[in-house]
Structure formats: C-alpha cells, structure tokens
Amino acid sequence: MPSGVEPSVMHVRCPDRLPEGTYRQVLEILADLSPVVQALPPSAALVELRGALRYHGTGARRLGEVLRVRTISLLGVDVRVGVGPTITVAATASGQITAPGGVLAITPEHAADWLAALPVQALHGIGPRQAEVLRDYGIHSVGLLAAVPPATVQRLLGGRAGRAAADRARGIDPRPVVPRALPASASVRHTFDLHTLDGASVRAALLGLVVRLGLLLRGRGQAARALTLTLKFAGGTSWEKTRRLAGPSAHDEDLRTTAYQLMDAAGLQRGRLTGLVLKCDDLVDADQVAEQISLDHARESRLVAEAAMDRIRAKFGPGAVGPAASAMFRRVS
Image 1 (cartoon, rainbow, N blue to C red):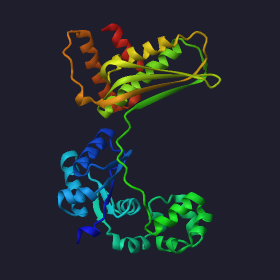
Image 2 (cartoon, one colour; image 1 turned 45 degrees about the horizontal axis):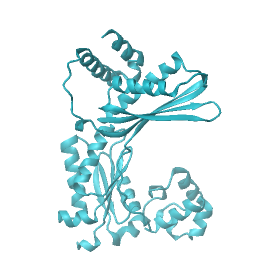
Image 3 (cartoon, helix red, strand yellow; image 1 turned 90 degrees about the vertical axis):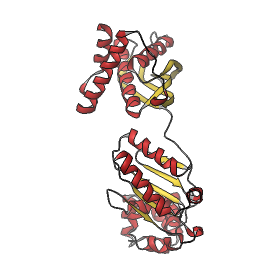
Image 4 (cartoon, helix red, strand yellow; image 1 turned 60 degrees about the vertical axis):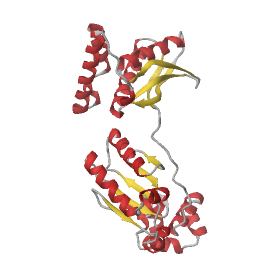
C-alpha cells in the first residue's frame, strides 16, 4: 500500500482498571514508537503516526502489532489498537476489537464505507442516551446518521453534540493528536460535615489526607517536590499556601512534616473550616530520586514499617491500616 494512503492516527485501549503505574509504562512504550502521544486516562491513549511511519519505514498496522508484542512481553498486558485517518475512526476501530487485544487498521479510502455499516452506538463519541434517541427516530446505523441532514441531527441531539455526531458519521474529524502526559500533580480532599475549628479533628483529617496522598504517590511511582494546602472556610473564602519539601519524597513522614508546617503557617484562631485540600506539585518519577544514606535508624525503621503497611493495604484494601497507625509508629520508634 502506498505510504500516502496510510492511516496516521492510533487509538490504544488498555484493559479496564489497569494500575496507573502499568498505564504509565504503556505510555512510555508508545513514546518509543512516536513522539506525539496524548494520554487519555485512565486507560487509553492517542498516537500521531505520520512522522513515525517515515522514521520506522513500515506501515501503521505493523506498528500496532509491534506495540502489542512489546506490551505483552514487557508488561504482560494486551491492548486493543485501532488505526485510522482520524481520531474518530481510530477510536471506533479500537472499540470494535474484542478483548484481550488485537489490531484493526482502517485506510482512508475505506473509512466511510466501514463506518456506514456499524450500528450507531458503535461510533466513538455517541453515548447510550444519544444512541437511544437516534434509534427512536429510526437511525440505527452510522450510514443512516450520515444521510440525515446535519440540522436534523442537531435538533435531535442538541447543537454542539449534533454537529459533532453528523460530521463524525461522515468521517469528518479535524481534531489533531495533542501531546499530553499525565498530570504532574496529585490531590486529595476532605469535607467536614459541620463547620469545624482548628483542633484535634482538623489535624486528624489532615493526617488522613497525608496518608492517602503518600499512598497515591508511591502507587504511581512518583515523588513530590512541593506541597500545597488549601483551607476552605464558611462563607466561601479560602486560604492557600505552597511549601517545597527538603527533597523529593513520597514518604508519609516528609509529607506530614510539611503539611503541619503549612497548617501552622495559616495561624488559625476562630476560623470555621468546611474543607481541606492537600496537593502535591512538581512531581517526578521516584526512580529519579537519589536515596540518601541515613544514619537515623529510627527513620529507617519507619520507612520499613511504611512499606509493610503499603503491602497490607494493597492486599486488604486502603482502610486496612488507618492513618493513626503511621503516627503511632512515629511516636514509639
């Protein structure tokens, strides 16, 4: 097949409920195929292949097969790969592949006919309620949707959604693949049932956020360079402050120390709190953080205990070890 008619967009679907760390590894494998990768969390991605086809000197279907071989051999994960001339065609194609995986490539000259034969609910971007509305009016296939005047589709589905559905049924989708990695931040929040003054209950809630955030970071294989605390008050006002950590970390002890420093900096007296938000900023891969040699045996013991508690939570659920356990170990170690 001449390279001029090669499809240039790849849509990748990973298994549902894929751990975020494994999903990130899939994205890294995609980046080896093409520099233009758009993450679609929690388990999908888009890849622009136009430059990659020339670089690798092969076809789009072949790159999809290479991707499957790499994810299976390196991660034990199979993926569904759709390739097409547009995002809509590629994403629709990947949705037509049955689990656990496979590759379906649709060439530009066959895209319209291929779409036309599909049931209307198979078109990427058509939700269950929209498909139900279209079927109620006798529009059961993508081909029939393409034949309906766009103004009619807009009346049925609404202006913007109707325009998009009418265009995509005709194979029209000018959206580009926009390089986008996973967000470089992570946040957790707590809302108080009643307006609460600073005290034991607020500190306990903050400790709970620290443990949740640390567990999230360690599960992702990330470390934070900065921590931001946002306090929300009755009446809709808020207070926010960011403090950098002494070094990149995902350990509860380091996050807790910085979080308490932020809370102390707020200087609360009679402020009635309605919620807390704790966010890690400027995240880095944990593999990039150098482990410093420490002569603090108590800290080393706490880190060993933290790893043990992570394993317990992974096996029995996040609630298996409460936040108080971490703080209690810190006091007795």
